[in-house]
Each structure stands twice: as structure tokens, then as C-alpha cells.
Image (cartoon, rainbow, N blue to C red; front, side, top):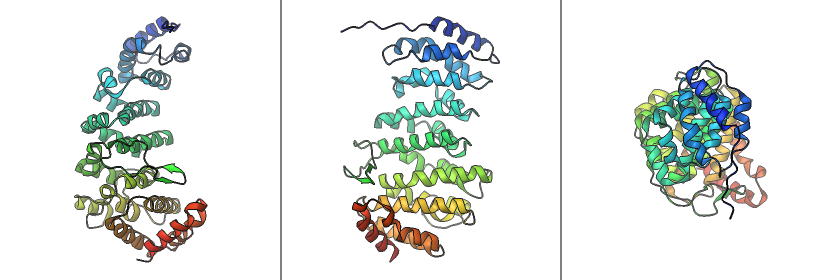
Length: 351
């Protein structure tokens, strides 16, 4: 087998340019130097370049004053073959938090790409779950970033982390419209779930950013609400109890003006949006359609059915558009699932 690795040309020039950027944070990067190296990178030739280039890039990003997109692009490529614990030896938790807080979407996505690596194994997800400040800053940026690409990246990362960390698994082959709910089959440790759903500060953060009583502008709040609504149906399939129950009923009262121990699902479905906002109303309809489509095929429990009946009853009590959409949902699904879905929704609505 040929073990020779074709050398990457232009590395010396790029290395010197990185030194210049370190010395002068106001200096503009030279895109050609970055592009020439990045286009040559493969899993085979990246490893020897990591200790040479990545520490400098990390230091540059801590102090850089211009758009770091070209620098972040190279960093993402260099991080390709590196696992989560290896990244932590190259970039500190503080550096990742700084990247998440950056106004530059490329820096946010770079940091989220690092967190995404923890979704490759339950052990790595458990390590990440212990980094409270990192998780808090990640969730804050996921919900509040104005850029669509940051929100979409954050949604994927959060769902994948909770997927791999889930300590119970739906049966193999559970899918909606041909798409499997879970990707990873081995049960996790549940530490990420506890961090997101049972940490008071984290629960407070999520509710505050999505609530009409929170600090975000109307436009930013709508983005945050939409991101939460799109994430919850899959999370409910993984751990229904976690998303429908909370110990922090006082926070429900503060941000959603409702009493009881209903969790994020109740807050998002019933108490989060301004019902006069037509676009958000459509998002809630989409949410209920996704939720019921998925819950039809997850394992039966009396708690699940009773919770769904109560949720749908309250949501449709004065919302004829939602009720009509749910009653016609079976007509808009794949034929082989239509009859069972229609029957399931009728059962939920006829509580």
C-alpha cells in the first residue's frame, strides 16, 4: 500500500500569513492563501497540519476584528477527522463560548460544528453535558441568532446530541413518511437531557427567549419560537416524558402565564405565541401535525395518550383552523399511513 502523502503546497505561506494576522488583528486575510490550502486537504494529509495551523487559528479568532468567514472555513475543514475530545485539547471551552457569542455567523457555525462532534458517541455527549456554560451559550445562540443558517445548524446539533444521549430508544424502523426518527441505536446516559430539561437556569433561558415577555425583539422572538416548535416533535418521540413535564412550574407561570407542571411542549403549543400572529399560528399548526404524525407510531402509553388528548383539546377549543387541519391531515400523508393516522387523530380529538 502506498503510504506516501502528497504534500500540501502553500502551507508555509499560509503559516506566515497566520502569524501576521496574530500580530495585527485589523489585517485583512488573503483569501487565495486560505483557498489554495483548503482545496488540497484530505483526511490523509490533514492530521500533520492540525498542530501547526489550528492553535494559531484559534488564537486569531479570539481577537479578530474583521469577518472571519474564510478563516472559519479552513478551521472546519481541518477539524473534519478530529473527534470531540481531541478538539477540546486544541480549543478551550472558553474559546468555543467566545465563538458562539460572536456576531459572525461563520464563528457560530464553527463552534456548533465542534459540539456536533459530541453527537458521535454517548460518552462524548456526556462530557459535553458537564460543560454547563458551553451548553447555555449554545442554546442562547441557537434561539437568538438572526441568521437562518445558524438556527438550522443549531437545531440539527441539538437534536443529534439528544438523540445519541437518550437513555431509551424507540423500536427499530420507527419512521414517519419513510424517515427514521432516530439515527443512533445504542442507549445513551441521559445527561444531556437532564442538562436541557432539568437544569433550572437552562429551562429559564429557553422560556425567556421564546416568551412574549422575554428580551428579544418581535422578529427575533418569532425565529426562536419557530426553531423550538420545529425541534420538539422529534424530541418528543425520543423522550415524551422529558418534554411534557417540569419541576419549574413557577417559570411556567412567569413566562407562559400558566400553572402546573406541563413542560416545554405545553409552553410551546399553548402558551408561547401571539395567536394574532398569522405566521406563528401556521407554525403551530405545522407543529401539531408533525407531533401527532410521529406520536402515532411511537410506543403506546396511557400517559402519552392522555397528555396528547388534553393538549389537543385545549389547543383546538377556540381554533377551528387547527382542528380542520388535523382532521384532514391523513389526506396529506403517504397512502399506506393515511388510514391509521386518521383513526389516531380521531381518537385524540374525540376525548
